[in-house]
Image 1 (cartoon, rainbow, N blue to C red):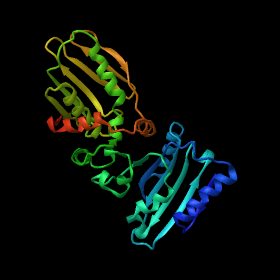
Image 2 (image 1 turned 45 degrees about the horizontal axis):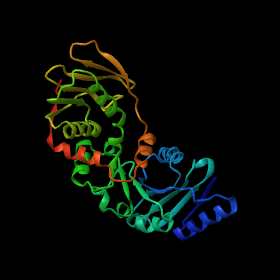
Image 3 (image 1 turned 30 degrees about the vertical axis):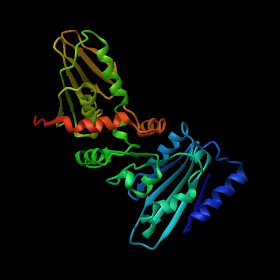
Image 4 (image 1 turned 60 degrees about the vertical axis):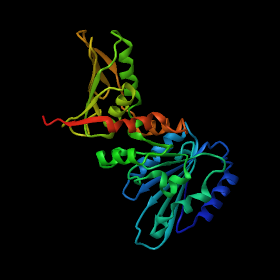
Length: 312
């Protein structure tokens, strides 16, 4: 079901939500959180709605999508309400804000927050320099950004310098499966200490976070090689080498679904990889609303990584 409210206000939106629940028997008691999405007018809104729709099947939520429009126009709020098949297990409220309304997003969403449930904010594209200090960030228990949508080096530097408990980034979530595969390679002999590591990949924040994670977990020197491959290649991390006195471990990505692991002089063996969608990464972030200490440590480790750009 799709309902449009033109040139309205949040009071009328709240009344309409109550009316729909009463008339159609739609209940809000099953919603486990409020997800606030901060979008821009040039973002792919259909993809954002589809992602929220998919995530809501695991995490039923009220989704408030704030779309910043023309700040120089007259103040105007246009709202679209999505329920049922159009919104998965969520109720989605898309709010287009023109004029100075965009400067006061907290005032727009506060009357629509579900009572006694966590608030999570997600910036699918451009995020504030300090998410926790933004108006919406101050309302939220968790703040989810995506450093891959900004200038990579500056974006991940901002995440490191502005980190506050409750922050996370989808560039970190994209590494979950890869980290599991890499950790499993150390379950094979020889069981020796890692003396150094090299992480090679494109200019993507996920690769930097991978290097930061290794430096934090291993406590040894880590070099991050920036390879000249295009950023749209299937996998961001191309190759990882873990140095040991007895036998190095090399994990080299072949394509988006497979990699080869070589341990010393033994024949290489394949392992399965897969690319995670934005919806899968976002769903993972919503499974735990406590501070992500592993992400915080990976950010902290960035300062100890040696960055080298490979020319050829």
